[in-house]
Each structure stands twice: as C-alpha cells, then as structure tokens.
Length: 83
Image 1 (cartoon, rainbow, N blue to C red):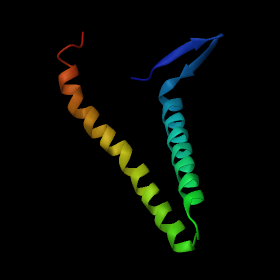
Image 2 (image 1 turned 90 degrees about the horizontal axis):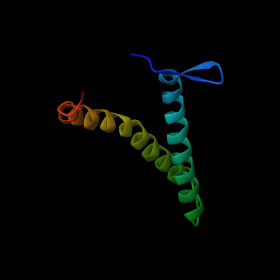
Image 3 (image 1 turned 180 degrees about the vertical axis):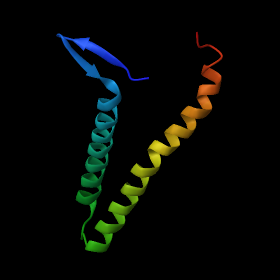
C-alpha cells in the first residue's frame, strides 16, 4: 500500500521518495567514511583506494539486506501488538 500525505495542497508519495532518500543518506555516509580513510593514509596508492572502495561498496550493498532480514524477523513479534 502506497503512503501519501497532503502538504500545501500537493500530494507527496512516500513510497517513491523514501528509497531515494535512503540511498542518498547511505551514499553520503560511505563517501564521508572513505574521505576520512583516504586522509588517514600516509602514502596513498591505487591498490589501497580500490581495496577501500570495494570494502565500502560491499558493506553498503549488504546493509539493506541485513536490515530487511532483521525487519522480517521483527515483524513476527510486532504483529502480536499490531492493531
């Protein structure tokens, strides 16, 4: 079911805005962490940059899957209190 809200006479569809906002938040978080990691290197090289990028990319790809799995498990317990 799509969620929508009225604000100043316009309809906001949260089902399409939420994934984009989540992706933006996760990408800016990974970017900030990568910049911090890069500035900590004394002698940066391409292999270290690729390794860091791959690590951050894999973590950012796995994070939503872990969240989905945990949410699916928690949904069973939350359903007991759901009205």
